[in-house]
Image (cartoon, rainbow, N blue to C red; front, top):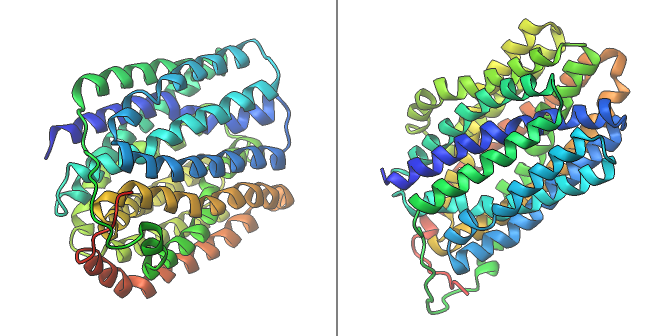
Length: 401
């Protein structure tokens, strides 16, 4: 395995240690410090997801044109300063408008970098190593995700602003490591035009159906974010440290189970593996519908983490296996843009429905659980199309310009 995979994984560990708690606790900051409603919080978070994917669409195409290193190293620099400004905003209790503006700017900067990370892993791994490469980076990232919530909860006891200070410091450490250890992974090449790249992409029937199912999937899986956070803290009145335990279990179990699940995934179609993973999310949601103390939350998160271990590595694996080598960033960017409509609607609809079922939230998890199950089973129907699309890409060259 190329050592740059390990450096990309190490920097993801550092990044998630600093940043994951900012995403977990931001809904609480909006609701309990700035007294925003559930629905307004959902709109803010949903819009940020759409904005992130819109930027990723363009940055994915740009990284195919100019390479990965610029996006890996130089683009994140403003993010470090933005997180420090968020720290000052929360610490001194400045206007929530300022906090929202800074948050959306960090989303833009992070979105510019993300497709380059995913494409770089594909660049430096062979087809047989691809799933392994994404697994290594994911395991290291989730080691940080296990540390981050606990660190964030401890810092929050002093002031929620310190969470963003930690994110800023981690960002600068990440930049330094990437600068000295990760050389360019992709040199753009110019080829004769055998097909127009976007017309080829949108004629890929599997990619389009995969993306449409992805919209629905993201609507349902989005509930494990802000909806779960506010359900646990506001409706079930769990202490903030318990909330940190719940999310820390997610990161810890990814580290423990990702490699065994990788071995399982390596023996099957990634599309079928994805379907299996979504069914685990369904089970996790149903557990939340019937038990609301800490133990049930931990069991539910554990089950959903197993599902995540099946689902997460298959996203980039499937896309990069059906994408021409000079369009990997473009494919990733377009998929993220299309499925962002699911994340956007999931944030708004989820928090609206949760507020509607505030007095009987069990119905909320049953409704979204059933929808998740139906979505997961739909992947089975497109498995044969995946193999056809994968074979087809090996026979067609796509222009890079």
